[in-house]
Length: 54
Image (cartoon, rainbow, N blue to C red; front, side, top):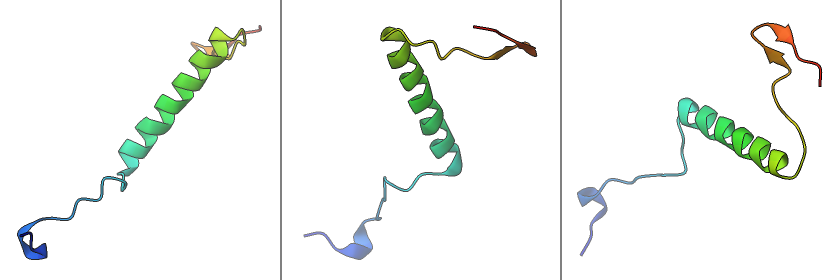
């Protein structure tokens, strides 16, 4: 039998700010890849400080 005092509650849905930033960045990369596969260019607009015209 499990008792509340014998186990720790783990809330896997609570993220640290760093985890939240990384997941948001990953979603952006996946979105860009999906759009590229379907023919939409979402590449960088600035490369090494120079605006890229496209």
